[in-house]
Length: 460
Ligand code: ARG
Image (cartoon, rainbow, N blue to C red):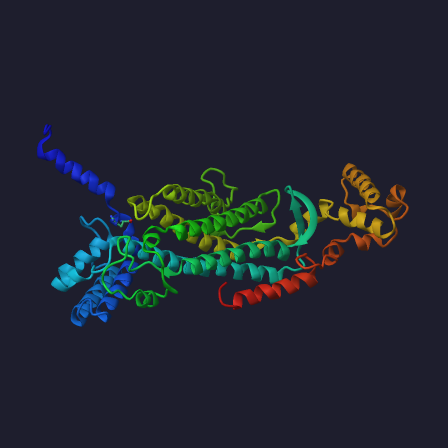
């Protein structure tokens, strides 16, 4: 069957290599790979599994490779299958025989499990910092706008008046929960798989406690088969990132609405908006739209890893190599979104007048008018009907409830007195809502204090 001679075999080899290789993407964690190798060989020397001299030579060699990769003097190319082979081959090339002892008592299976964990852990820390940066911006807006009135919506219909501080506070809660989620994942994942070997540990007297400690883990993982095949933390991280992306997307959507010609609640800074190639009047919220749109690829990464892991028999399977590309993309995407979004939020300006006028126009004080009647002895169901009639009356005349004269009000219900105007003023509507979590100043100030403290405390 050798119809194609040697040539086909060669081409096929190349195709297999291309399909199988991971260097083109796992190069992303070369730092973590070297960090793990340094910990591993330090332990090997400490345990007398390699000599002190070999240990020192290997560590020196690895540090040199790290420095050269960081500086770009060593280029990550070649026919190597993955970052692990690349580092090991380069080490042997540079320091000779001693380099061949690095991989003693280790498999690429526990090595890659470690690298991916270290990488995800580093990224969790970085993302937590970015979310914190966004929270700091939100807190600033909250502090400044406890009496900036705006309509609160349900079904995207004006419902009741709130304040800008209150609205921003909702996002503060969402992103704060995101931080706690990242913290939870970090705690749960923080056990070291190194020393699990291919799947069944090794016969060398490894000190797994020691390497775990060197690498900042709580301790070693407890089952070597699980250790090399656990990607739960990738799934959890992508789930947390999907939630962050979802939160960003909801916020972006509101900013897009607020920035529209119809609302004009906010004005985006020129740096965060773009013009149209044909319509000179346009100033488009592209950044907000992109943040909203990029949510799709983050969700995609989550679906991908869930599907890849489904049905995999223990222990390591090559399928798991598919845990990387989309995870890296999702991490970079969310980081990019957080940076741009924070910049956009911190530079946009709020049109307080527009917000307040909008709240006034939409009968957002109708509930309070009904409550006024209830406080004067009218049953709530009747009060609801009476205010409904008032609203209809106002709509026909294009006016607000506050614009009605006392005679007009009394014509519908004689219970109304002069103090109705005070009772349904925007200020009263908001200020009377002082239960914990409500927009009234007193409650809001308390919450702001708690938020401020949350940002000073160690990360959740
Ligand atoms: N590139 C591989 C991965 O990402 C590394 C582990 C390879 N192990 C193996 N037995 N082929 O999963």
